[in-house]
Length: 115
Length: 113
Image (cartoon, rainbow over all chains, first blue to last red; front, side, top):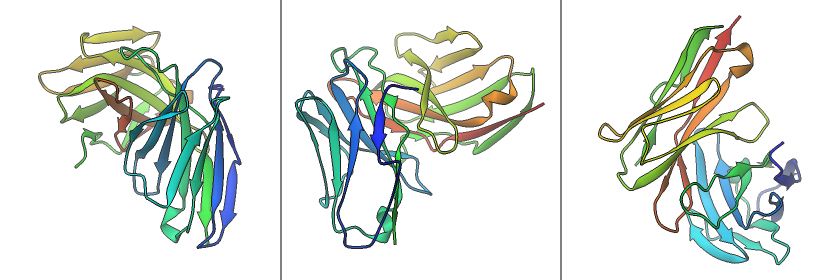
């Protein structure tokens, strides 16, 4: 158990809909990261938040957005869903304070299926 | 443009023998490398890491070697156990304030009893 929790574990929805994925980081971690893993792709970085502020952005679609709240939990919002958005979405957290050996710990993931 | 490559999609070894998983990278700005293990239906689990200022890091049965001139790293597992059977991902991070990880596509390790 990494200490990172994600809900829900599974999500099935229809095209055009909007969903919210939730992540709670490990106790004490200030950074939260979101990754997407599709069938034919490795883990792709989407976005990072540090202590409530956006720190880095990857290949995140405009239809996707995220935020980190004062209690440090984070939400990833996916809207106007398409079939191709079906994937595993992972959240990771890290201390974020030290650049040298910052290690990310991953949650169990949310499996999104868009029908 | 795949900056982190794991060229072997799968590897099969006998229990008790050494498993060697390889990873190549192209971005010379990477300064921190990590290996993760992933079982089906679970998130990646951190295994071991190495900073670019080192060439070897050891933790129990796991050793990671880094060859910066060749832009190559490898994970050695000795002795291999059936419970090590999983997908192994190599990941790399650039320096500075960008903490994002760039992952390889993974190698499926099967350890046969």
